[in-house]
Image (cartoon, rainbow, N blue to C red):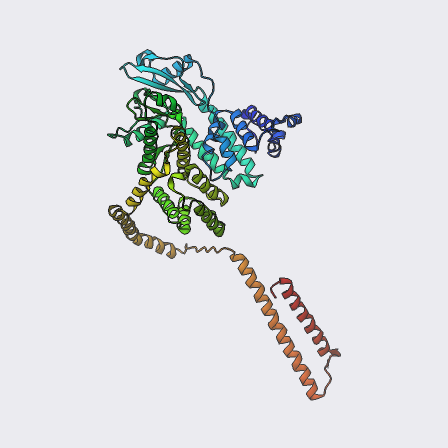
Length: 556
């Protein structure tokens, strides 16, 4: 594949980063040395002797900038595909860069909202409170008096991300042709999946809609606080939301000093996340301490909904089946649930999968829920999936990442709070909902409606089939695994059978000639040719050839 001329400079940067961190062999095998005319002395510039492979992968991504960092962070959720040491390093990827100037931020605001800044905000703070690779956040106040946080997208970031994604796709295509592990770890699918997620993150209106969707879950509830979105001051590159002031959850000492019950806060947080996941199926997928705050009234506030997960009712049903199978020590039920949740390869080792799930089940046998680590249990389950090349749905993995992050936050706040204990009522509710008569009736109604629709469409389909047959256009294709091999084997058998029959007939004729000559006491010479002697020799050769063929086939 030819390297795009306009991207040559970026390809050089990527090649240099790979060489610097010990991946020069990849640059060479991909043919980038020849395509980019890179100096061979670069191969000696490797600075990785004391670092592990996983560390070097993280350092390469970090050096290559926003698109690669974001893709690495997203890849850290794929515990079903990537080895655990790599996952642990990818989680460390930092998304912090120096802020861009306030004049640039003001210019973007005025351009996107199509009016002078003074007509939008009565106050705008030039110094950002947070800066990341995609954008930065400024505080301000609307003309109507509301305090707001304004997220402004970094100039040119969309073009940079799109360029790097194009290069990443090209490199993945080149790598797929050379290394089997690229296909084994589903790298092309991962790149496309995360490219879509990253491009969606560049559109701030998507984050705004996510925020409002989560806010609907807490209407009239009062347990959690979600910031309001101000749509008149929002665009694809600007997100204006309600400013929420509180204490970040990464400071438990400050919480305790101000008189908050840390254990109660931990329980409220767990309850809020489990509500999102199991009852509504739409959840905050990155609940780290920087995105969580405690308000004066004790409510938990969530911010930054750039990464969310969604579980359909069907997925939650299969998830419940998996949990039920684990609780009942039913390995077959667990396999059925995993089969419905993930994509199993055709050549999966079913016995091996069964054995691995048996070991997993035995590991948690007779252990109280309060002593089970959600993170460890999920890692064990995803490890089994990885070993057997089972691809889990991305949102299930996002749920796993969310619960892992939550467990870390809770452990920091109050280690005595058990997520598994608190999840038990939600599991019971899922089971109850699954066998709810009303829901069973609705499922039956939907099935009946689907069947009725199929029956009603049958006459039309039959007419279409009749028309095709009458025009002589019906084409029948049958595909049976290993059919060609079977037919070839049958052909060999029939040929050998025919050969044996010919040999038998020949022998019968020869026996007839011998018996006839013996009775008549006449010579068997025919036109001075010794027929019996030659026939006997031919018969011996034919028998020898038949025996040789049978022994050679190995199927005697």
